Figure 1 (tube, rainbow, N blue to C red):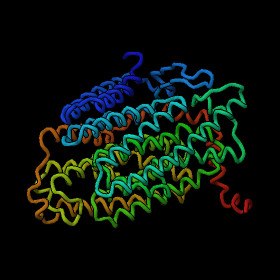
Figure 2 (cartoon, rainbow, N blue to C red):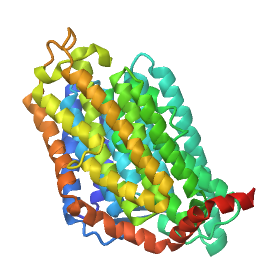
Figure 3 (cartoon, rainbow, N blue to C red):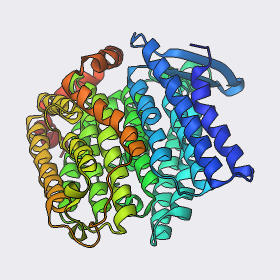
Figure 4 (cartoon, rainbow, N blue to C red):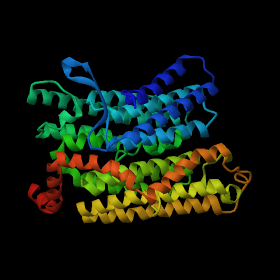
Length: 506
């Protein structure tokens, strides 16, 4: 393992993407180059995972002073929390180049740039560096959606642009506030994330900064009621773009809450944790019910993804070991299952020229391997025991009940909604009588089957034997709690006395 492995994982895709944009490379060269670069980063990430020692602290640290007068540095590192988000991107993104072979050169180039920027955001240990990568990873998405999306791509692009710009500006203002506060309290400039946790933040301005971060991350997750950009963007975006948004980018929003909000704004987080938890549960229920009403296959998956992101966010807001560990585990489970489902949706659309559920049927008889892989990913998405989705959701619900019984019960019962619409969709698409659209549907090719097979195996392995994965997560989660004990105490107190506190405040 060489010294600057994180920098290579970040900048190799970015530089390759920029090079493709400025050179007259053909579509085929762009796709093959993207595949080679993504496989190279996958190999590096697997080596990183194998050498990760799970101490709880940042590992593979790189530190170079950047703007010394302001305390800004090029500071990278990963722990058990960030490792799995980085791994999810590295494992899943090569699939795009293998499954979709007809995109334009610019599309593959932008996909490489967004891959590197997402890795940078996850590995950044300096707030300014994180913000830079956060902004860079959004730009390629705008181009991929605006240039290569569906017939209603322009309104969808405008909506997601307005939402994300508003969130980014609020985050930038909050970061500036933290830097000024650190200078006022310690008489030096510093934007290291670890240093921000030492701040004593109280008062209304601190609460405003807290919500600045929370709104920015809530938009990206997306958390109810900041989810309204999602259905149009997920539906109109090319399948690979939707895959990136759902499988990886949304998880970086959750990661931001864990990494920035919880340790820095511990007092504010404890005060509003119950409201945020209810927001997560409401989002689960609302998006789940909205998914039932959808006739567009891809739009249904969009609402399904938003619903499952609600329970992932809930695990953070409950702030106990079980829930937070379950959240990290569920991030990978959701990325693999829902990401694969979106890729399958793209294959269905390409081969049938329709996304309407009523216009499909009989796929299982025509493509048994496709149906089997789809069923495994779908069952993992709804949390069937023996699949990766069960472990994370079970731990989150356990933590939610420990946090607040009502929220835990609502979260558990809301998962039943997902079972309903997923099984209904699967029965209609795969077992109803075939029609003209699905009559000539072809099964997965050998290359496509071998592309999906490792992820399908991962879904099963994570469901049957989770301990090797949990062992790398737990030390970082335990360290986070040991460094922020006030969060635990205040959260428990807030929930135990919520009715009394509410009455007194009124």
